[in-house]
Amino acid sequence: MFEIDQAKCVNVGDCITACPVAAIVLKQDKAFIVAEDCTDCAACEPVCDAKAVQRVH
Image (cartoon, rainbow, N blue to C red; front, side, top):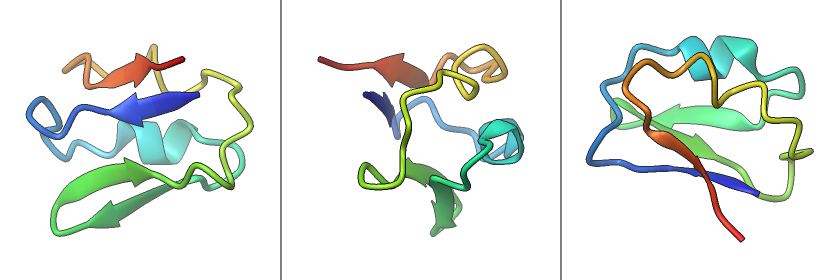
């Protein structure tokens, strides 16, 4: 599972575009991963230049 570190998120939106199942949403200028929709594909992690997307266990 992945999560987005809100302190690092700079609202570029690359993670939203990269997600093949639309599991990342924008709320109040920050990206959030909807856990129920995330397929754990990791497509969002490499596109985040801010390194805000992190794998959690």
